[in-house]
Image (cartoon, rainbow, N blue to C red; front, side, top):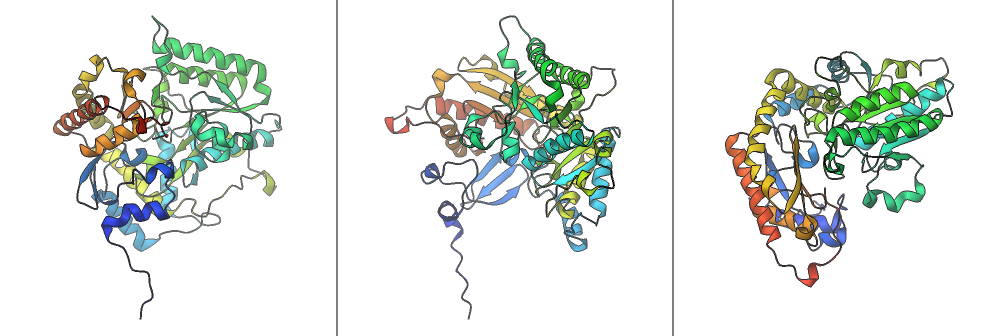
Length: 468
């Protein structure tokens, strides 16, 4: 006789989840009033809940799902790998998916970033990059280089090392007493342009502040970490590529490791496979950071995977007969074979399907469909790069709990959409066509009208929780 606990009906998933699951990026007190969607199936760009309602996944499920849910080709690759080798430790062993993935990613950098260290999530990749930078300087006899520089408004994850180089107060402030001190310099966010200034002018101002810091402190600074082109979690703050060129030159001049956090912006999201590829001027040789962190889209939204690509000069600083001079960082699921195989299927799509060229066509369609936003007096800073769109609702129009209200109004219009504060953004899967672009833009505009035309009761006038 079975004594197993009976499974509740599917429609009870939301209430069961609130009782048993501690959800991420959620004030659970509020989750009791606004239960999570109970998703039971995914098909392409759509998610279906336990009542059969569908929702367009406007954020690619936190920026990971590049080619849609239950993609047939990625599914097939995983089924094949599952029958071969789901996992083996990468300490003292290796396997074909990890080796091939490392080789193919290095080739995408022209071999400049020659070695790949695997982990599981984005914050872990950032921790690895920070440790690599410090440790490689120590191995070179430069142990005073132990400080880090990050950009204001930047976000790099929520483990303690990653939080130390993050400047989003709602994530960082509670843990500030636990964190190492980092230097924060001006963000090149183009929204800071003064009258008559361009995005490149803002980038120049930000670079000047970075130069002043490095000039006085470079003997103690190990690395600069930045999100190339778009600072995501702070509200899709976009900047001119000129900042990346300046940062590369300054890090070269002052002997500072340059870490590119491409966790959100890599894998084609900004229009090139690596966002940092756009740093070079047209016709000029490519320039690269010293370390690149990848996660999210690299496995297509299937399995946790992150990695750090490293220049050979950093890798070689760890080669020694002394074990303590090696990089001993490890995770149990480092280089998981299933996750690496999913990533290889993602790279196959880029290689064989002309994804970047098709994305340019898709982006033009949705940008045209969203054109009415540019003339809407209720919003400001409409912006787009690659497959990322964002706009800010002006504060007088937003009202209280704007992000939550927009999210709930979006649900009613078949959208799974989660603004960041007053910033509404779209990072959809790479599956748009003209009809879907027109539909999506229409639903976003209608949701905006729904929310901004609402009358708020006093009960709604509470501090707004973070949403991403």
